[in-house]
Image 1 (cartoon, helix red, strand yellow):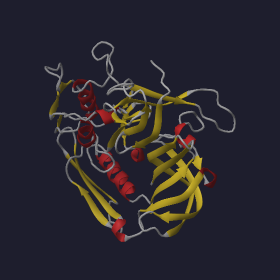
Image 2 (cartoon, rainbow, N blue to C red):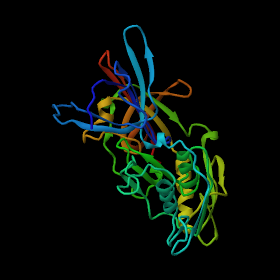
Image 3 (cartoon, rainbow, N blue to C red):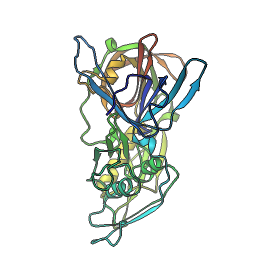
Image 4 (tube, rainbow, N blue to C red):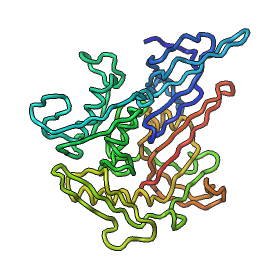
Length: 372
């Protein structure tokens, strides 16, 4: 792999809902240095209380399109975008009808036990060329995956297609926090590893917190979206209707008896489950998610995001604990509010690091969703 020093990084941003991370940068002079599809890995050193002599890789992605060029009388500059694999999964994915059948006669007949994860894996392995296989797909750019294979079992699964491969995977095979299916969320970390798991706030064995943010870690103002301030913001009950493999219909609502104050959220189609207990858990998880108290937007040291204390930093899907007692700005109204958080867990849904190479400065931001 060639090492280059002429790529100037302007920003690196991650968004869990979008499915990964995106780097923007420029190249001066050598405008044909990178082309669409090239693999780019970013490495650097982290300096904390003591010098860290180790170069660490903090991003692995691919150039999304041929760079745009700007020229003047004396110089040339190419603007480049580099993303994790989700940003390259922009082609069309056709509708696929899966059935569970032993000794498959074709690829869409999956031997028992067929699960939604079986269908997800089939789509990314057989309907695109992104998964690396030394024999059949040596040019694949995804080499690591962590797919939940103990998920929902089905005898038949009809997934509709669409014009954006990645969005079809999210909407038809996963569902996200609010979309149904089985309330999973696929995403890539900065190392370009593919995860397909229950949405982070819904995991029964969630990852441990990466650490605690306190006042000493925060820079600038703290912004907050208070999600339960008005009656219109509250969810009083979630009602879910799901189908299991035998085509039996399962229903659940949470709270099970009397709704609390707020709207009634009904999902009566597009949800699959193995058991009544699964549907009960889905209803409770969705209720808790919709009633999460806060979204926080905070500014932190950019090195905390890129490298952190463990060399890996903070990435989308990570858990972080916040202890903070002090002023904040309501990001909706602009009003000042007092925030008192004591060891409150949050999930990293967005992060951003912007670089000012001329001023040799950087700024880091986190958008965090409360774990309810």
